[in-house]
Image (cartoon, rainbow, N blue to C red; front, side, top):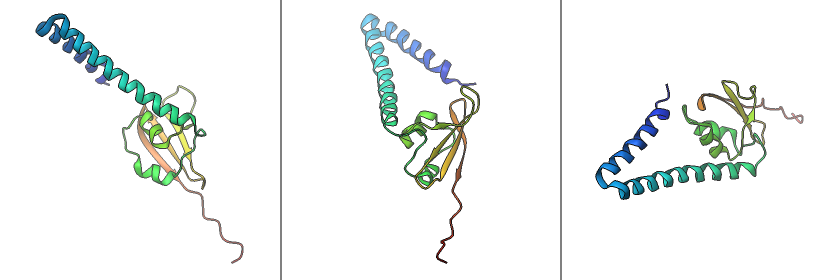
Length: 136
């Protein structure tokens, strides 16, 4: 169960109630403005990440090997989009779990990431087979 969906709203309500008990309306105004600022910071980060990703082709990454090295289990899709600066190429059926995205670099190496519930559960780096030189 995802406790953040319950814990964050309960903590916000507790902060507002505590501010009311301590300072009445000025306390509520201070806590409410702090919560709005926190929401705006997250919204600004999301917009910045998506704006950078809009300028790149879907499913492209500078280096699939470096992406593979930077990935960690449990990070969300927005974090991976921020790392790659590109939206992933959807490999699974839209809105079905698990979601599978692929990022490919110029050398045709690619990283396939599987997200369950928006969190990275596994990823696989696949590199093309080396081509033998015809001059040999």
